[in-house]
Length: 222
Image (cartoon, rainbow, N blue to C red; front, side, top):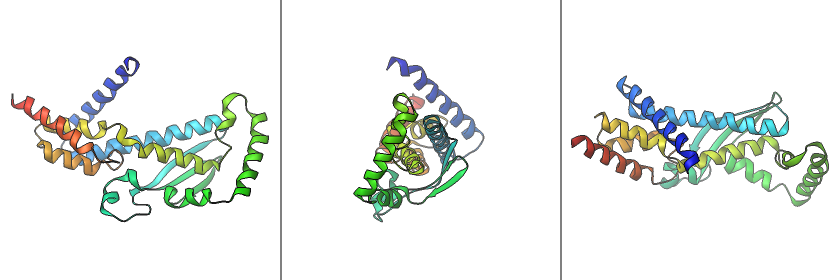
């Protein structure tokens, strides 16, 4: 906790400054929240590409071309929360070769998992025979076991579905908007949750942002 304290303060302070400047310039709160989630997506894309590029010795980039709820389901609950049935289209480039993956978790991954036991055994044997002698240490474990573009896309997609572990992209803009008198707490939390297409992956963000907004409003009145 002590080691992460400085980084936490920096993350909060940076979002406060960004939200304050954007709202003062007349940008809507929803745009501020959406821009922070766009940044979050871009960081994940960059870092996942870097990780697998470093471990595989290849030039790798990846990006999400579509992010939305409901890969398979159509009910009202999953329509609101990305984390319960996420739909991702992904482009992964490995050594200049482009791989397009459609509906990552609803279609592409299930198809790969149903490839058959014999096919899986052959892939494991080839992976173990080739990889263990080529790369020292732990690096041989990661990139070769499964289809590399699919593995990259899955890791990045999983990271996005964990986004509600950190609610700063919702809570901080709400607090700033309330402190600046742009919105009341209920209005601000509703706008922020609706705009946070990544961070609001599961229920709970609105209640936490509302609590902070109410505290800010109370302190402002005092």
